[in-house]
Length: 58
Image 1 (cartoon, rainbow, N blue to C red):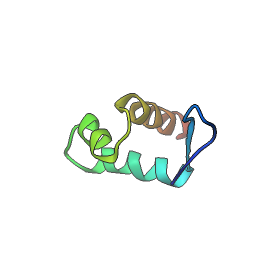
Image 2: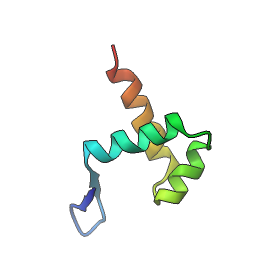
Image 3: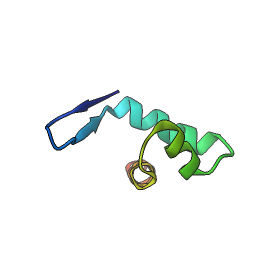
Image 4: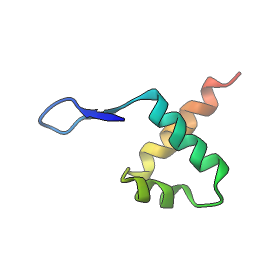
């Protein structure tokens, strides 16, 4: 899921976790901010993952 990389709390999330979060935001009729808050993530991080996902698709 995630791992803390330093004392400054730099967290690295697995690709599988990011894909699951993006899938949740695409399939549920719930605001992305709400999903981020439930999971314990900052909404900007989820929006960035969604953007990266769109850019990766041909």
